[in-house]
Image (tube, rainbow, N blue to C red; front, side, top):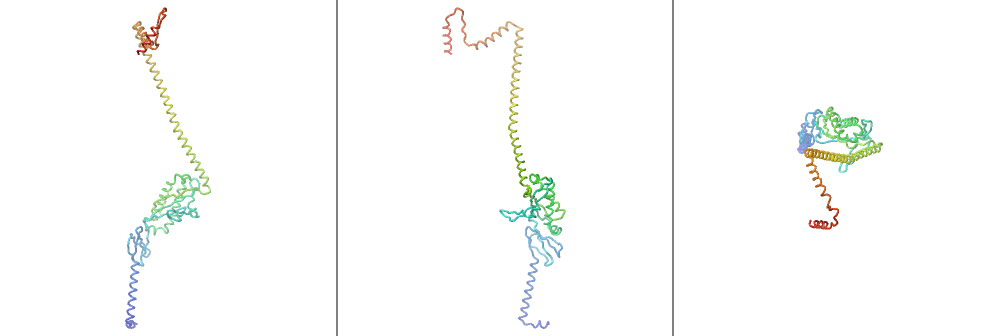
Length: 326
């Protein structure tokens, strides 16, 4: 048989060598193609050899042993999210959501601490921070994360009243849920970091929504009336208090004035009496003169004549001339 091969025609021998070269080149290309791989900037590569973890590679061109090593690309820099109570039907400028399926209804319907029902829709945003744990420690990490997120949210909502869930407690519920989900992720070694838990929409169940809205409107109206009453109170009461204080101050000022005047008159009378005791005639004359000096200017013009006087015209003419001079 070897002799037969050696005795091949030259043309056939050349063709055989040509095909051998082609097969060798093809095998080398496949070998090279299987050895080189690229990891994108938002991923890391996890290398396993015959199913066993051996190393982790960074973004860029990398090499592996062909047919013996496998590459798992894990997006560690990409923010991912899980939606609960709704699903994004079409993302874009006008995003459309779907919350009518039975699965989403079951996710969102929850029992609050005061035994009421609420429909809670929320989003869990997360990143993979440990590629090894995310690949090998848990069989299905995304499904596990969905289950534990729903359990954590039900626990947090179950500790609060329906009013807290629907109104003032939404921010606290999101932060508490994030802490609890992150704690469980560490315990399960999911290799996941929870970035944020956002409550999208919280509503009462559809059959009681109208009644609940009526109660909310009544409470809002009550708050409005209370605020209006407080506003009127703040307008009227301080003004009345100010007026009362002003009246009291005026009365006190008037009383002080009267008392001071009385004290002054009493002091003057006492001083006058003391002088009268020392010199009665002099004091009488001085008081008479002071009194007359105060009274006479207030009387006006007075003409005094005897009982025989019968012509007062000269005197009146003199008075008129005096006024003209002035």
